Image (cartoon, rainbow, N blue to C red):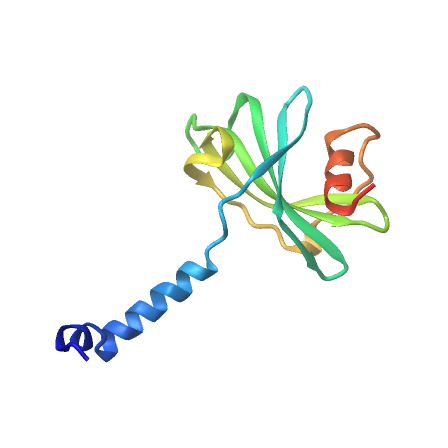
Amino acid sequence: MDPRFSSFLSAPRLSLLLATALAAACLPAHAEWMPLGENNIGSFFIDKGSIVNTRSVRQAQILLNWNRPQLLMGQGSKTYYLSEISTAYFDCSARQLGFGSRKMYAQADGKGQLLLAPQLAYSDVKLQDPIPGSTGERAIEAVCGK
């Protein structure tokens, strides 16, 4: 073996290389946002690649691009956000959905500075019936089928 190569793969470097490769493998893939629709507050998108089964429900990431900047409440300043990505939970048999944790971003499409990321435990999520014809109903169709 080439001595330069063997010194590169010394135990500490090999451990670092393996740890880096493992961390990269655990990173989420780039989201591919598919439109769900628009309403009077903004445009909604779903990342179908984020759909997973958890407990007795499915979950997926939903992106909302607000039509108007939203004031970040409780931060003591006039900070605004333009988009948020929420973890949505779907009970496919009951055709209900609810929203859990979310992340608010300074720019549209979940870009720019992450301004706030409140966490909400699944046990605190309230599953509800969607309004007929709403983006919520379209989200259920995208995750659960028609």
